[in-house]
Image (cartoon, rainbow over all chains, first blue to last red; front, side):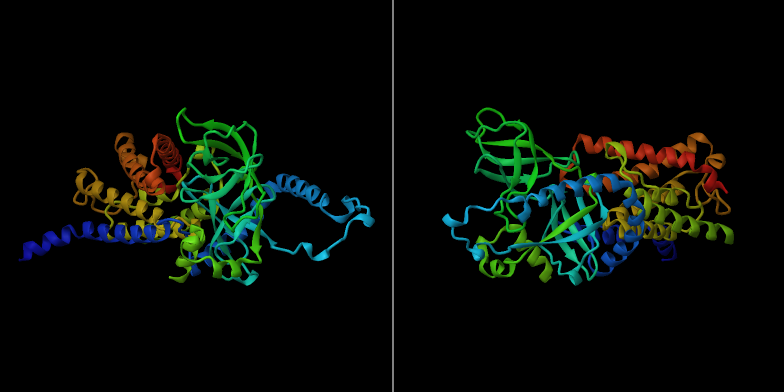
Length: 288
Length: 168
């Protein structure tokens, strides 16, 4: 019996290895399953706090690019303000002020952590539930789209990047009405693929790809990237397009969280199969 | 003995913070990744209790996970690396549990080039295989394999370059 215990004692480390591996894998699968984010509660706060301090230094390196992006955005906005518009001859039109109402508002946020080298990438933002950020909100950059908010703590939010193996965004070609889905093949941080374009549609290289607005996450018409290549064999029913993102994810710094003011109303309407899948999943996971 | 424990605790804290707060934030060319936290496991002293080595490996991985948001990936990889290290000490006669009378840090000068390079290759490669396998999961392809080997090589070079610091 003594010898038996000796053997057990000698090889107990194998048992410990198995236990520790199971713990790690349990952690891994709970957080990476699909559409899974990295952190909840405590982990998110800790990671956010730590990264916030290092971000201050890293920010300095991207000042030039950030400035350029802000300037470009300013130019775009300037084009929209009243000053840039010529009044239409008042005699022949009736101005109806309530014709437009606001659907989206934008909350500026700072990226604290941004991974681009993994197959499943996430971002960490310095805004949280305190600022009115909830899971399922879209995140856009000054140019291009970034991802969808997955988890929030009171001060931080983790974002499922479009550079994630499970990410899927509804987009369309700017010149055609056909929409398709955008996903990442896991190779380069500035290249994504677009699918589900019928083969009879003639796609030109360099054509703009914009968000379709069907997914309820992203406002319609945000430029995502440009077509660089058409990847399809003759006889295929659909064609696959290779798309270069407008902005390389490595250089991201400041982003906007998009708040859809109709979200609550849409959520209550869209139940069952009507609901868009990621929205449902995010909601389910939040309930857990 | 006491100083060795102190040294390893300092290494643990330093390497985990370096990995989690600095190195993980620096994008390297070709999507390579540098894991310095594996060096902590690599230079854990021989002759240490088996369960302690495994537990330290796991903790090291878990801490890096918490800082970089890769839940479980570093933990699993580090546990495997610690396990491989433990197997090495058991089945290698020169540095085995029986051969060593005291706990010593496995360095190049102490082990010699052939032994140390084999030992480092085993530990580093096991860490990278597990990490990249978990990361890529279903997307495993030739490029990922190349990135894995490249990253492991980078880490391997670091292991040799940082000899002096660990030998102290």
